[in-house]
Length: 568
Image 1: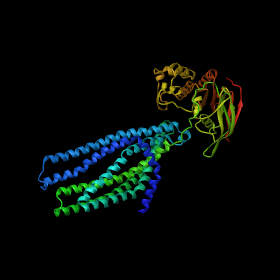
Image 2: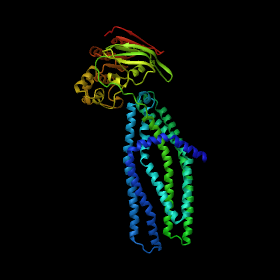
Image 3: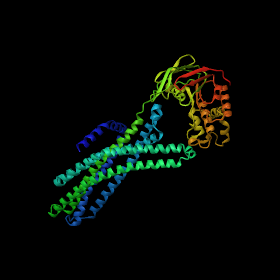
Image 4: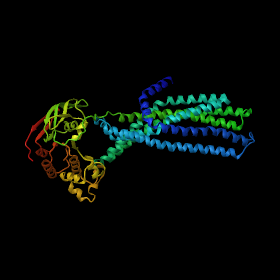
């Protein structure tokens, strides 16, 4: 038992940072917490008065008090009704504050995913992130408003009742005082397995979200590869693993409840026997016995309330730790110029190296790309072409060396999150968002006019199929671009980048879903009309005809760069 208490206090100490975070985040809810505490205190007052009113009614009915009247019954009913109303009011108030606080935490988590370092964010699966954003935030919000007021009310109620009982019958008070700590000891003894199983359930919840999200996102692949039965088998195995954890937690919780119930039942039986004896000796009336037994039940309820706060607190700490892993992601360095720049610029890379998980991706690379150059980036899959683009986008940082964009006057600016203002980007695959085509286009330029949008669509070879749809710019793009082809989605992504109109344009396998004829029409038009520095990652040799510079990334992390004459 001593070891259990030592572990208990060690865990409390280890949770200090999480508890401080809760207090810090909860500062904005102090007035709501005070309101909830006030409502709970009023409700407690009615619950304390209720046993005394019951005593008067029972004594009146049994003849011990000849002054029976319907006023007593009305008073008892009114007290009970007010207690119910205040309890309901507390529930409604708590729901309002919980949602308000939950939104506040989710807003901070969302902001972290937007402004945190890309490399840190990418380590979390989106399904796991959604689990933390939903289940864990709900747990924190549900408990942060009520934990402290419930603890205050339970302790205050316990003290008041014990003082009242102690002033009248010290024996009954001693029974309550012995039963209370015994129940708390049981809670501490069962704390460790309860917290462990709660953590496992939270992690399995993340696994559940991840599994469903990946399957829904790749339903076409699943059907094509006939994975339905395998996935159902995997889901059954997952369900069985989770069920084992749920049942283990249930067994521990049930055992803890049985032990607590045995202690409280024994205390109640002792209290009942003592009251019966006092009644037999004429020291108690029936009403007094009823009042004391009710108060004994209230003592047990208050002790249970204090005991329930501990596992609730540890559950909240588990969720808090998972949420903090998101909210405390490192910030990007957003310092630097924010001034727009439209003139062509170049890129200078000097002895840059980059490793990931102890694997060298890029090794001591150097090159100098002049303004208006069209650079084709080639090389086998997985050698670091996309990594190079991510370095240019400042999504990650080199281990050594420097990268800078060079302006027309020869001055340079180190690559950083601030230099993204100089870039337009067409990533791999379909990156359109759910909503209208107009909404997607405005991602590139929030203040774009219809004329500008149509011009970008025309240059990207997308205007024709958009005009054929009666919705036009209000064409609805659903999840995974339902309703339009992969090639059409790719052309819309190109149009979005063109609308952004920045001095550096980056294409990362931007034509993989286009046939060669469509690709040729689009890029011949682009080469003839854009006055920008272009970087084109491609596996198609046909794309190199639009490039005056070729950059080949090798498997050892080195890079070769050579000039060539454009064919187009």
